[in-house]
Length: 552
Image 1 (spheres, helix red, strand yellow):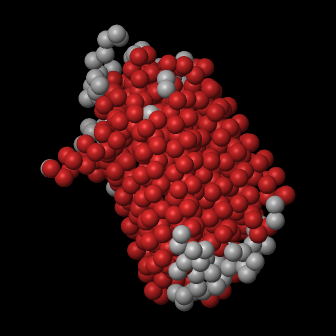
Image 2 (cartoon, rainbow, N blue to C red; image 1 turned 90 degrees about the horizontal axis):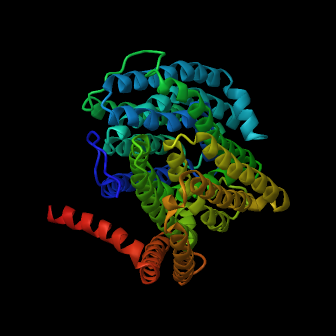
Image 3 (cartoon, rainbow, N blue to C red; image 1 turned 120 degrees about the vertical axis):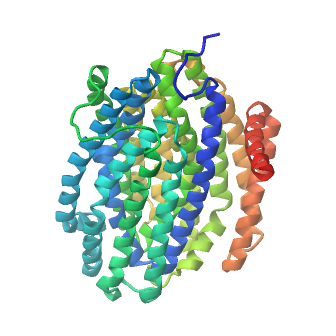
């Protein structure tokens, strides 16, 4: 067996440590995602399901998408692999210079971009919102201008997060979105109290609008600068510099940045396409699909991202010191868990689709929605359509990071861009051939087609570049997931149907709880019967942490 290398504060038992880190991130992320669901519910209550929700969602996407296209993917590909190797070799000067260079370049690039976004806010809003009324265009323009400072804030936050992850500090980066959600929820509540219920854009005053826009940007400020608290404890010194760590670090930056940027840019362009296609649907489609997409991202954020984030430093370190066995063990274990948990999430999206859609429709109301758009059927159909793509989308953060850790950023970019390109084409084709009232369903189907291709392409690329041993047992886990997901999704749908087609809010909440419990129990039972090897440590890890918390 390969001897484990001596490294800094990282682990000699990577699988166990990665699992603990993933559980920590997952626990905090679960709270964050619950707060995120609460955020969407409060937003829906405050502004309704109509025009203001469409405007807000469209404007709020702009800085995030442009940031990811310009720098987010590059930074995601760069920070951890550039810092992990010098940290493992005990080279703090290189770590300090590299982190400082990344932070300096982020600010220099993203501050001018933020200014440019503010200047071009009106044409950007007109491009995305199509033939929306002038009042909505004006509101969206002002919101984009207030949201523009978020671009450099995102860049600072990603660099600080990467530094903390490399030093095995996972709690605060996972906690930051929770603090952000709580901040913006407060802004939504204030808006809901001062603005007319169900008002359209023309009825909202500038002061009421600023409560929404300034509150949203303030939430980004909180999410970014709260990371300075744990940063003081890792001993890193940040100072302005345009130079990186030198040597191999400088040579690797360009290739990794371009390839990583292409991967994330492809994703963000799909979100721009979604905005364009849903804005071309009936009034209310943008808000409706945004809610469905948020629910789709919930299992991705709770299950897939924690495993990807906690595995990334271990993978980068293992490859950096030449420990192939450690790399393969870490990746194959994490991938099997991602696959099983993603299939559980897909089953939940299908089994809980109707009560979930009913809850949001009842909370937000449908007074400002086009009469031709049936909100509950449309949203539940979108959730079902998105579900099959969840597994491929969940593999995306883990397998791209596995390739980044090996320096195979170009291979990761090719597989990723190809998958998203398929999603673009499929979404456009479905939107053209399906009725405009089914636009959310059409976009969901197109997304799933692309994500299936994306997941398969990344898995094939990892097997090619890292060897089949890095994906040991993954195909078995996928087969178990398909069977368990199909049975549990059908069971959850059947339970929700027992409550009737038309439910009020109280009945929908009960149906949601009953269907959710059914999906969880049935999936767990089927998966455990078929695949005890992977399910036993997964269940044991969760049960062990719960027991320790209660006994402690």
